[in-house]
Length: 254
Image 1 (cartoon, rainbow, N blue to C red):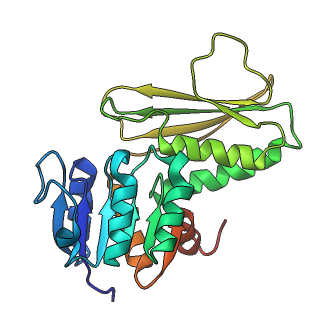
Image 2 (tube, helix red, strand yellow; image 1 turned 90 degrees about the vertical axis):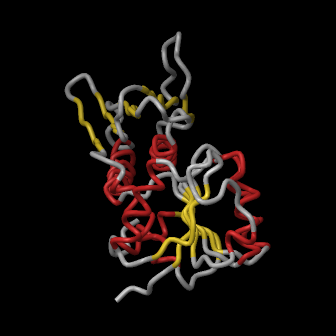
């Protein structure tokens, strides 16, 4: 029997609404909805809004990421954050949370299926070290309203390749008007339509091609993962990655 939580939703767009639905289905209550566009209960986050929350789930914009993290830590409210586009500030936010004794879990993707893709990608990149006839690349498709490119998930995939490959050492996300260098890993992005998210890792040689692909049918998998992460985070302290939650959920697989 899971403990009931009073959860504040920060960012009340399509993902926020789906998170709300799953929270209610799982027996939790909504402490409020914060959205600067005025579609929630509050347009801004503050100590008063956080007062009755047992946890926060945030899928918002990166501009306020540090200010929000400070408020969560000062209020003693655990935060599950799926906001992307702030990778360069990760160490800064981690230091801030730890200095204030907060509880914070961040991830670019909360889908269990996507994390299985990550694990398979790590294994494939490592195998390439003994099969250097293969080149490897990443491509992702997202809906036309997505504001960041490449997606946080695509960059996570790229990092996992770089960390497990002896052949690739540099991520390239720009358009290329030249031949790609052997050490470079190209990450391509396409925006259009209503695609929730498709990520493909391709290993290609002169003889054959291998694809590892994750296609999200809806945002439901992402939203459910965020709610499960909030339940997992209860009673913990510190700065966590979504991989910490996923590893335990998948029986300790890394």
